[in-house]
Length: 209
Image 1 (cartoon, one colour):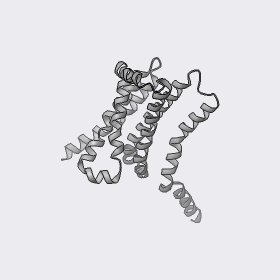
Image 2: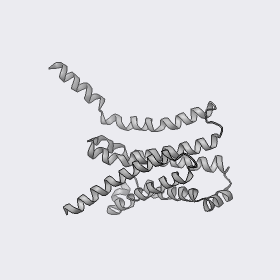
Image 3: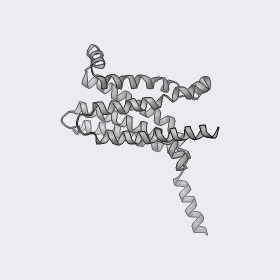
Image 4: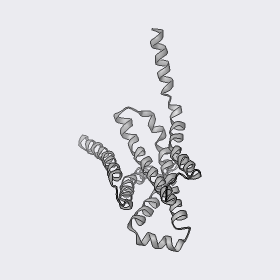
């Protein structure tokens, strides 16, 4: 009996909701730390600028998908503690997206604003990527509890923009991929599943009204 009680205490100590936020925060920063480490140790390949830009963009997209996965995981798998990190994940995603844009402006265009404007107009995947980033800004600025209370119902409507934004991000990823489309396809399938789940829940609610 004592063994069972001790075992339960040990299991509950491992599943400590208070540890989820710092654990997820550290995990999300590991890709950036690895990128910095490789930068200082000549581990970024033959085209360091492209590696930095792509890696930051990739992780912005990965974290976006995980943010969208919080609700299904919470409801289907019962991982209720994940709700604690959803907002933080969204902000970290924007942080990576900001670094992705900064790396493009810095390492690809060398802060030449005239060329940056021309590039945004000329290349569709750059246009779409820039538009995606701009649309994220209102979501970040209204992510606080204070803004949630101030906007009320409009807050939810505004933050549902994350769904078309996520589609834009995946299309941007497809358009910038030159040869191997396996990873963009996998990401598109995951996003489709996450959005399909939300559509299923929405139509189920409509039927019950």
